[in-house]
Amino acid sequence: MTPADTASRTPLNRQRVLRTAVELADQSGLESLSMRRLADELGVVPMALYKHVAGKEELLDGMVACLIEEIGPAVRDADWKRAVRLRVLSARQTLQRHRWARQAIESRTNKTPAVLGYMDSFIGMFLAGGFSADLTHHAMHAIGGRMWGFTQELFDDAAAPQTPDAVPPEVRTAMLQQMAAMYPNVLAIATLGAHDDDSVVGHGCDDQFEFEFALDLLLDGFERLHQRGWTSRQAKLSGGSVENAGRPIA
Image (cartoon, rainbow, N blue to C red; front, side, top):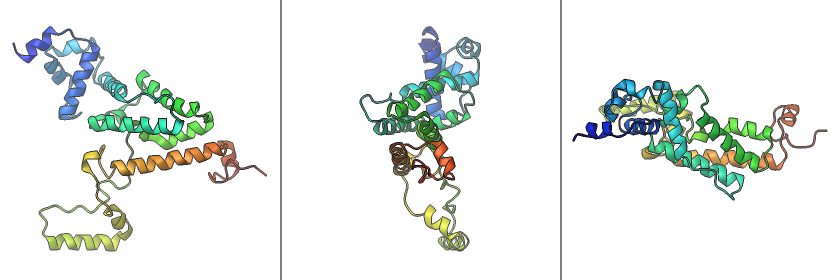
């Protein structure tokens, strides 16, 4: 009996369709995933899939829901700061297991129940920590994609000088010298340190240290604002200054 014969004898349901799609994306990437290929993997005709997902977009929505299920829930009996940090890092670990995940998340334009549920529980960690709805609103804007475990990096592959390996050493040296003369500050920062390619989600220098460094800066800042009773109204009255907001208004 072939794998296709075995698959065809296994009852088809939505969860099996989604999980198989996730496995295929893990193996070959999101671009190679199609309804026809998924049907072949499941040992069914493509039309059989449409009983469980309306099409490719709904399939991707369901795959994102599968990812959310892998993200650890909010830690009980933990202060808000630790709870948020652990949740973000759990999301990051999930995306590192599924390299196509960022592309799928960024392509979603509608907030599905799974996405809304994740956002709701994420917001709940701040509110449970005593944050006002006002400060939580702005904290969520600041966190942005970090809620999902990724962030858009400034120093991506395009920022550093690109020289093919086949280029002679003297040509590479000349190219770097030209870069240093034209954009010395960019070169100094973009080539400053080594990055762990295995920890990258997407493209660029988004390694684990940089990700946690930025996350901790944000959480420390949220904590200071919370302790000072920050409000957006006070911030606007103080000219938008975060430092002055939360202090008594004369």
